[in-house]
Length: 132
Image 1 (cartoon, rainbow, N blue to C red):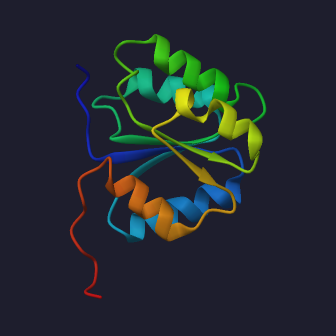
Image 2: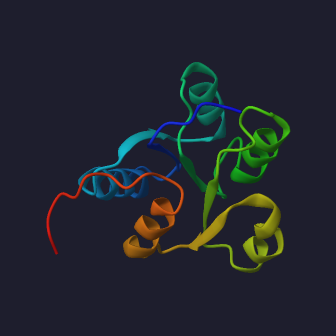
């Protein structure tokens, strides 16, 4: 079984969305790695150990999209156990493929509370930043 750490890998081609998620998750206490596409994600995963506790994956990206990346992850015994949270605005496409693609599906625009809750189901809770 692959060694897993308590950081989140964000795979999102939209720089504003990527930076927003990174800011929110960092503020919540999570360690983050962020890349812009599937090729960068595979490179990151092959060069970094331990692996993330969860991958937040956009489906619709240029180059290697989320579907292809997920297929490659599932084919690799070392990477196939990493939970994947799929982000999509595609609606029916995600519904049809969702069960085979991801631990969970989050619809765009993303409710940040839902994102944090989904990540907390797969990663250790970071130390609280504030009481409330």
